[in-house]
Length: 403
Image (cartoon, rainbow, N blue to C red; front, side, top):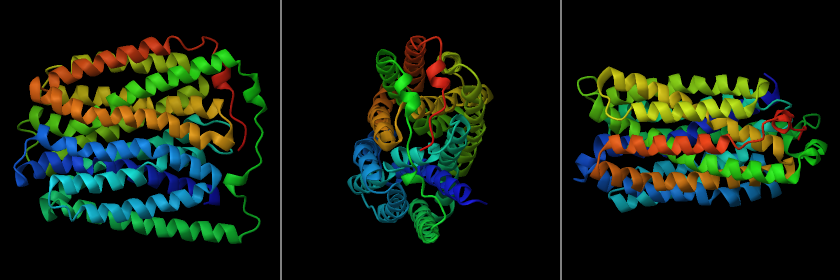
């Protein structure tokens, strides 16, 4: 493997871990902590909110530090920091203590998206497939959270999930530091963060189009973040309620969630290919429209039908992820791209943080049927915004310059 391929592998593992850590509590709360601490699901899950707030708020300083100091250094801090905080969270004895641990995890988890995605697109002429492959790893982290956590809960108790994953992340971090030090000693190896920058293509984008593009990106990622966080966080509980007779133990619930998320991850590869070869506006419109349809259909489904439709709506929810990142990569200069990604994700994750109390409120009052109708309405709003993208699509098909 080349050095660039090795670094891409580390970045993919980082995306896997980032999403996995942010969803361990979702499974633990559903399957164990509600019983151990004598709390309802609606009472317990709001304690995840501090972690999601930190996940959003820390993106801006993380992106700024990466652009000004070192992207590689920030990635090393990500691996080590999130692992140590995860192991510390395993010692929580109360909901307040676990909320503090999740807050610390969120602080370090915030590093990945503004830093990792900037490194993924550096020096690439076509960004759709690299972002899609990287996105698949993130989705596999989402998928594996329920499976791995469920297995560890059934066999070793909920703290083991935080401990085992923390140890693994620290080990990966140490390996990444070794890789970076080895590469720096090789004077002939290019350092991605210092690649000469040329942005001649960006000057061709009219200012009005650029402003409209970023408004649409921020709006669609905000609503998309709400849909993504709501579906991924709530799915284990949805299966717990609607797959009665199919999913009884924590491991079984985890397997079904893993099945849905893994199949859905394929959508990012398809969308990544499509946005590299076709109009982003058209692809985005189909993705948003199908989200609205499938989420509405899920209204009161149970059993096998619920499982099939869950796969369908997660396919298009995951499929949206690389689209906005491709738009940003094509419309921003390398020297501040981490900060632009940080802005994109602080909007996404700030809205995502609101998903937890929203889920608790809606589930407590009306159940998941009402939640799916709310999310379907949000998807329809995304479709409306996407139709306002410029029809030509010429500027979003222009590859970003190296750097």
